[in-house]
Length: 308
Length: 308
Image 1 (tube, rainbow over the protein chains, first blue to last red):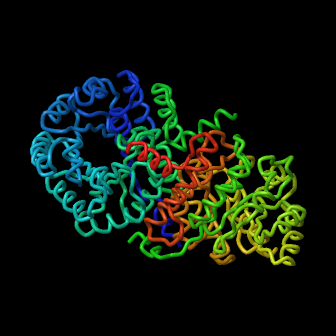
Image 2: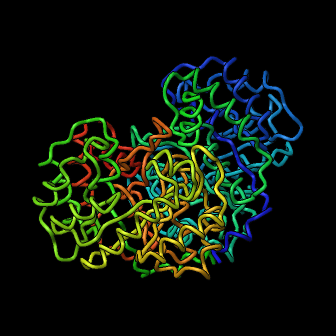
Image 3: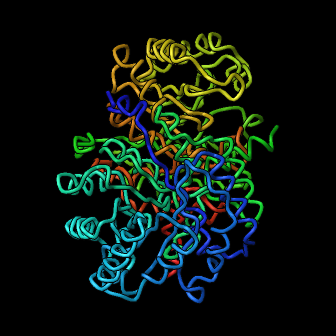
């Protein structure tokens, strides 16, 4: 009837990006030991992929200066992939030195965002990433790519779907195994998700696409539903909804893993994530950052606990 | 591909319930004149149906004691339906006395909620509503029904889909033109929406069903998408997301009209509502209640305004 029945028993991979995507913007200081505990609780909750940190310049992102120590101290479960963002070859080498076997690079679909975010044109960034992918392949490290501003740019506004297709193909041609088509400013709606995925299909395998949404306008779960209906099976999310969009201060951040798991469980989708243990991880980190988390599901759970 | 293409140019009716569903629980005092301005701004925004107030006991809901005055003072546009909640025949008569031509009654799908919320069993409430519907028909007043706790009950937990079907049929048999199948505690997810609507279909026309969601767990827009795919074309929402669920203090309230219109516009659905004028109405009432509104879209707009 609605097409949702056929999602029952579908297997979905949830990529937990909280520890990296959130912490790079978090105002509160979070101790390395708390990051380690948070990541261990997330893997105990069954999350199959956790983006642990980024090997970027500490001057650039001081919050992630302890990437190496975090990687050294976390318990690595055999069924969890622990990944790191790397901006260039130097970052990749630092990641490899601490035993990271999967990294992520980040390109943009709009020129102005690329120049302002990473100080390079898109083409320049792809030259750098070609080198990263080559070295990663030599070290048997898998590479994932983010494609930022795929649904809109804070500087240029609308981003042509053709640009999203071109850049996605270019990234895949570098050898990345997956492109996370990302709504950096949280402006995507299900109609647009459907359009973008419709354009990619035929040029890209469904299994090479992940989706990364922010809940800035409340549409994140509806966008996931549109993605699921289009055949996408990998979604990024952040425990508690951590990770604000720097271009919309005060607004909601990443899609909350908690909200996502609630919806996926309800659809009969298989994720292997325990909502109760995810709640433990979220409660723990919430107590460390000292401010309310944007996840509506987490808020509802806390309210229920308070009432009982 | 996703089935969303066929929603383009679909006509959807958005029922604005903020002035009633929100105000009955709002802690701040809102002056009658501000309610009137708010409602006038909502109709100027193009909302086709506005639930203005309720003709209930002022002892029971002191915030709505000015229902009569509000109805007397609003500007009535010919293309807007102005409705009121009525609990019984006495309420209906007060509504008719001020020229109301459409009212709403509220029954529950779970026995405990019915007894605690309106102090009557479901069957007792239906006896009362039979009388309301009879008198309304005599006065050429249309009657809509809410079916509360259709997706879960704060006291009983899960509510059998069979009960939702039985009560929906009973309400339609009383002569109501539409049943708003309501997720009182904001627990519904798209899989459940699909299941409930699948059960109703075949026994009820799509045009007799509306859906009423709370965004307590962040699923409201995804639920609307599931409803649209199942053929439902009427959705309740509240400007700014006003209207907290009394059973989940601190949690998000009604689905925000702002978020809903953003998604529907993106799908190419026709609603006749101007997002800019809706934003004006929302900003106005936000300034009167003195606290942040839950609508994520409204928050994102405010953040953008503040940044420019």
